[in-house]
Image (cartoon, rainbow over all chains, first blue to last red; front, side):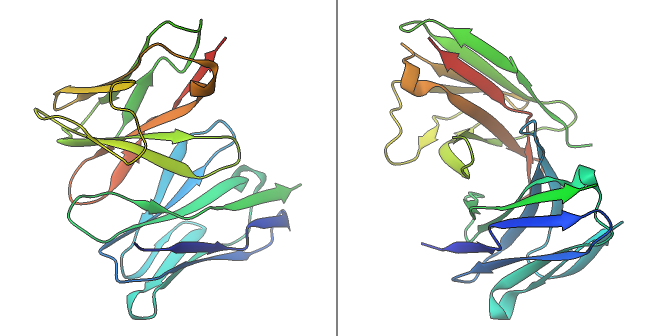
Length: 109
Length: 114
C-alpha cells in the first residue's frame, strides 16, 4: 500500500516565523488532504489538494503529483498555529485515507 | 458548512459495560462515515467504514463484535464499544464525507474505562 512520510516530525518556531512542512507519498493518489489537529484533539480541514496550489490566508499548499510530494507553507506563524499537522492521502474510490505520522508544531510567543 | 458533531465528548465507564458514541453530520448528508481511534501522540488509526443502509467494513484486526457500528441514516452513525475494558480507553474520532473524497471530522470522544 501507499506509504506517507511527513517531515520534520517536530518543529519549534518563534512567533512571526515562516515554515514549510513536507509530505511525501509512495504512489499515485487521487486524494490528498492537510489537517491541523489542535491541542484539544479537533481535526480541522486545511486543504483538499490532490494537485496544484491553494492559498487560504497565511497558509498555502502545493502538491506536485508527478513527483509525489506536497508542501504546506505557514507564514507569519502565531501561537494558535501550534498543534499537529497531518497529511493524508487516498488512492481509490473507497475514500479511505492513509495517514502520515504528523508534524508537531510549537509556536512560542 | 460541513459540520460534524460527536456525542459525548468525554465518557468514563466501568469495565464490562457498553458505551455508545454518536456521530452526526449537521448540515449535509453523508453516505459514508469513518471511525478512527487515536492513541496519545500517534496518528489516526482507521477502525471501520460506515455506509448508510449497509454493514460496516472493518479494518484488519478490529473486532466487529466488540465495536458495533450502525449507520442508520444519512446524518447519523453510531459506534458502540461493547463489554469495554481498560485497553479500550482511547480517543475515538468520526469523519463524514460530504461529496467527492473530502472528509470532515467530529471533535472526538475521549473514552476512559475504569
